Image (cartoon, rainbow, N blue to C red; front, side, top):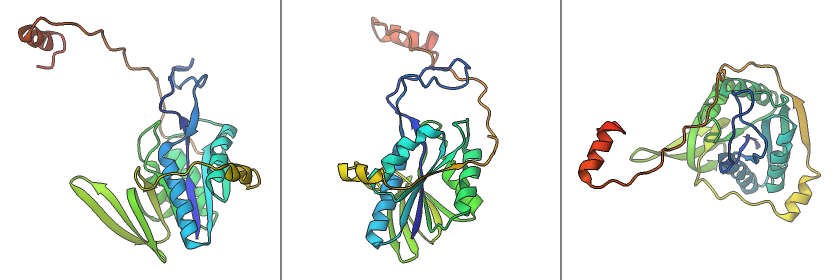
Length: 246
């Protein structure tokens, strides 16, 4: 089975973000970049499926600049077999351009299953998995919380409002992975050493312009200081005249 896992390099969620000098991007100085947390579940699921089958390959794929090799090496240390960096020099992309570039590469190689995280924690738009599936002409199941394969047919469970939905579909397909699907492993010392010998290919990314333009970026306004109120009447008056919520 040929499993492709798409990952993304994102700022750590506990990073202190500053707006860059251009007013349209973040200042990377002092920001720690990591693999998108939801993508870790996708990598772990791909490795587990290969281990259970006793055969196959797990290829991790990302779009970005040379710095993204760090996250690809992490995936190799976890147990992936191969990594591919679609090098675009780190230029800004959105879900549209990223999906177009990634899908074009996936089309050029054998693939039975494409795994992704349910969303990236920087843009939070959850568009990428469905866009890739559409461009590849494959079925797509999103936010999967449980997954099993029976031959060439998968059975997936996803949480919906008021219950859990169960779907099945033949391979190949695209699946986005949610928290709770598994427990991502930490790279072992043996895995880290082995990762140094595994292939990490750099391929020039195809040129696709983003459909979304960021005009400006600003931090949310600071919260005003709290105040002590004498009683309920003063609280109601403040909610009506100051907060304007009643």
